[in-house]
Image (tube, rainbow, N blue to C red; front, top):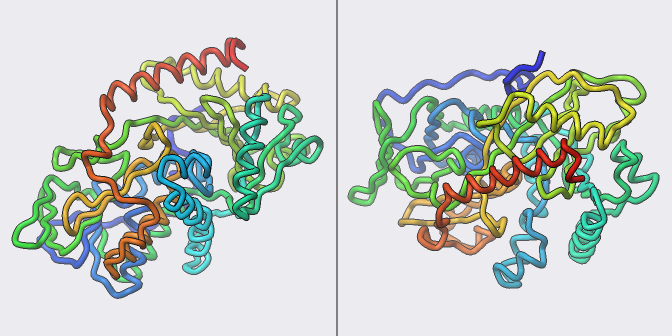
Length: 428
């Protein structure tokens, strides 16, 4: 029976829970948000002996960090040359290089601290679903290979072998990438942070953030943290009236569905090398297997105001499109999360006030971008060198998205129509 529950809640190793903050405390750095960015920053600061307190409004990994697909991808959605146009050649190349190394940062953290993240470093595949998609794959290959990235164009029988589908005739294999269990990774980062001396409080939502006589005070319902620096690492799950950073992106939702564990010669042909994958559709589809052999399908779009059968019909259509020789799957789990989105697909880094840092709008690349930015924030705090941040700072006003709620709504409407067109066979 299909359950509305995130698969990662079932398959991630359990860790100790953290108490609610009930009394005032002090730290050198207060971090708000227990996801990839906040936990990475906490670890890299604690490694240098910095006293860190981290406040999480719910439970560690309860936001997007515990609900993502688990693709450890390099780069942004934007092509490298497009980054150069948007940021300038020097800044664009710097960001491309930094994000190209970000998967290694993730996997090195996992190895160094022995995190049980169910990680596989086999690369990921960008699958061209039509002729326009094939052109996009060719362009990305040219731009990435020109910069020395370990990428390969797959065609013909080799492409069919890697994808497990004869419906795809060209794909881009990025060997820098891989997959993991995102909630297991997040929980593992939290354990590492606490082992290094970081104090984590759960169910401790920040209700106000004020600067008084050179110190920052983050107040929760029951207590407050006094600190010299604050990192706001809440991104798409920013809540409350105490900050305006939620205005720097608009929300896009992401749906996922997981099959029962699959086995047998035909089923094991799907992504046989442990890669993750996503296609070039306007409303992309993502594909991966988990450690138990389940097939996970995902796509952009939310579940509100849709019948329960909507995405099941979509998933069955996608399955038949890519794996027509397989029997209908028995779907086991479905869930939905959200991420911050910008029109140019480039995230924002801001320093709204002295001692206050934030990054938003990872555009679906949170695992690598968030882990990298946490490390970069730590380096910036320790050295004061702005070059530790691989993207130019923006002001809060520059970063604000006009009519974010309307953009989110219109995006959702467009995605709904697109998916309906897919299972009505109007859109291929």
